[in-house]
Image (cartoon, rainbow, N blue to C red):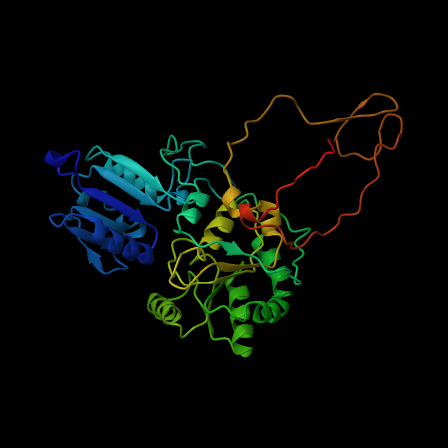
Length: 390
């Protein structure tokens, strides 16, 4: 508004959920000049005001209604890691249609500028974004007191074995059906250990692979005397709002979810995250842990209870980075060289040379690593110091 006062630049802020719409609108209302009008375009909020200077819209409500918005100069997409990089989806449909009515700039905001497979949002078949304009390091926010650090207990005894579970090509994560069956075996032990380790923590949020797991975990917590409820994508709107409000007010000690609360859920005084969701997705890992990193009066940190090998597999939260999409090479399949006859042996994992019968290697028995005490933040890693006599 300072740079283009004569253009009266109207702004569209797109969010994925009602909760995020209300959070964004609340914070924007505090920042905007008095002469600018803030409005919603969201069926879940119950308001549709396409004429406001700043419109906070849920993507489900606005996706097919670009024609009602008028002249928009700036589009801000919150949680922009939800966009496909292949040019499809609700977001791209809205932007493509809006571009036929006006010229605008698009800005994305996210804590994880990559997709679930770790590939940058600027990479792909038809990415919307061309680069990262500005980045704030997690350590910078921690040092400034804008985030609460995650801490781990001395030891986690319950360790989920996910060996043998396939990675789905569509989700780039563990096969949900198999994972759910495996996780269900560990739920009683998870509850027993959480009750012991998190006894001094006031507000817990737990993540599971499926609704079935979430329901079972919540039932076990309730049987143990912990007031707990389940909030998922299947939870009716009115019930969802009621349960979240009970959680905010302290009437519920724990909320169990699948993905519904992984992004944008803002209850600052959550001081324990119970991770019952083995994953290879850096987005799930960072977004889920982030629910416990909000600051709140009297809160010094958040307890991270990882009952899987996720922390060990993906590393400290503040070291997670995206990667470029790997380009196919023309070098052919990898091979091993036989030390006996010099033949190129394919596949490279072969145990015996097919030409001369020489044993290339001995198959090692797979060892399950399970959960570990790996650092969840970079500063928790002790520096390696080598000393030399002079």
